[in-house]
Image 1 (cartoon, protein in one colour):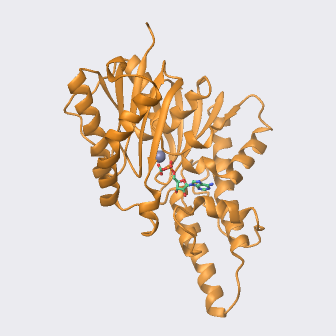
Image 2 (spheres, protein in one colour; image 1 turned 135 degrees about the vertical axis):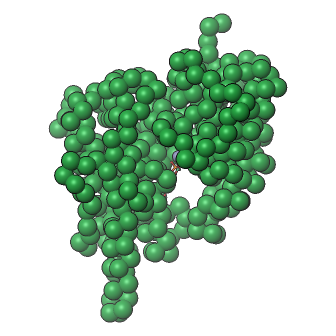
Image 3 (spheres, helix red, strand yellow; image 1 turned 180 degrees about the vertical axis):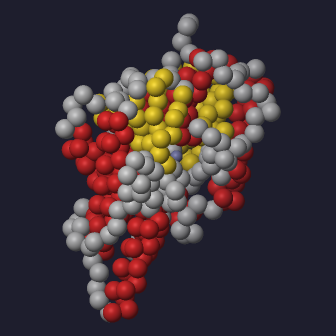
Length: 335
Ligand code: KG4
Ligand code: ZN
């Protein structure tokens, strides 16, 4: 047949994920082995532990993805793998697994940028219409990416310090919440009111960059000062105030950029896209701009997965891009 089957492999952080997609948009199988339980007691991802888990899981996940899709490796047309950015030791496992498969079965190999993957998760639920703007918010990234055509990315704004998810996780840690803290803060925030005044980092008037480390420090200082004075701080109100600050800056800059670049769509991407406050405020804000389509993928496509890598890889494959067996994990890969 003329159908195109692409296998995606993702091991950049703490999930070992493999997926097969058909013609760039249809998920045939999508399996994820999460390591969260192993990293939890350390309060964050431990690179060495991540690599070990990937080694144990990657072949199992490849077999599972083929099995669930009722397919054999010989019917795969291309293998897409996350080349970077991410933890180098973690990336290497996926890259080497992909290279071994590609070499053994003579299948074309395509390296994919992890953020391109997050953005292309949206193509699994809708047609992408250009120009579009993507707000990528994860544990490692906070970026506004402009796309005028498939496969071409222009970063118009990015964080100058902490990523949004990183700020969530660090604030959660201060409140003695388990890792990853984002969902816990989100839940607490909905039980509280934003009564505590915290800063918003707007930066220069025309900048689409972000900064969350000042906000994080303000939260830590608020807790510290209260403790010194022997005062009680409501964790719910603090979470609500923190979330209000993060969401207000993300939404305001996204709307401003969407108008400036006259985009047809705004795509949300990355693990923080699971945030209920962010989803709600974006939806409300875009009610005023009915000409701009707001796309928010389902949760399992927002967090790290391999279907998104296969989706981004399909476009690269169709554009004739190939990676050779000399491909290496690149923790600092540019989009
Ligand atoms: O995209 P992702 O799964 O992994 C990275 O590539 O980083 O994102 C994980 C990040 C973590 O920082 C986690 O705390 C955050 O997404 N996160 C959330 C929520 N769910 C996950 N942050 C805020 N609110 C949530 N509901
Ligand atoms: Zn990610």
